[in-house]
Length: 202
Image 1: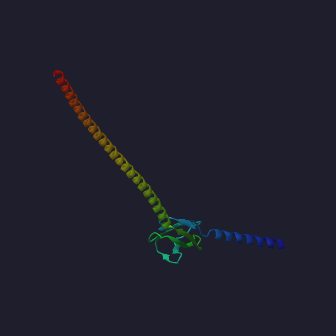
Image 2 (image 1 turned 45 degrees about the horizontal axis):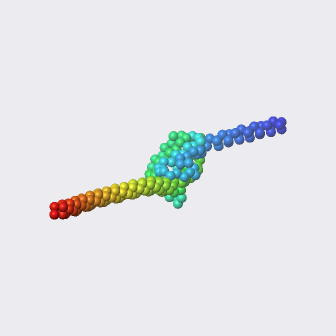
Image 3 (image 1 turned 90 degrees about the vertical axis):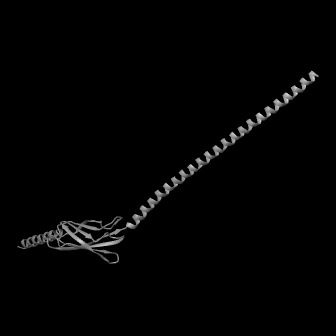
């Protein structure tokens, strides 16, 4: 009789334990979110998505707070079990945020929790500006090199033209000098021949 009593108590205890585990496992908790738990994002966020590990009802809701406790308005909520989405009035600025959620499971039980994340758009903008500035500096450097190259080419062309002009002037002066010398030589030779001829006649 005692053995039967102990077996009965053991069976009832096991049944109650299994029932409790079944009820607990049926409760709905967030298993995935966007933004993800403890993540840091560098883009505009105006929608929060929570995915639960069990079915949820339309009464599921959420609230968004920043690190100073300021609440951000949610303009629209939708539930497509097991997914919950909240649309904000506008993109969240850079900062730390906490989504406090309360879910009504399909089993009729209510669960609650929170998801924390960080938005760092300013850093992403700074990196983008640095990249743009770097590209601009490279382009300016190339432009400066091209301008310097053009100036050097222009200077070289001017120097070449000056040299050619000077050479031409030198050539002209040399030709004129030879012509004067030749004329003088002819005059002298003619004078000498004239003098010699007169002496011979005399």
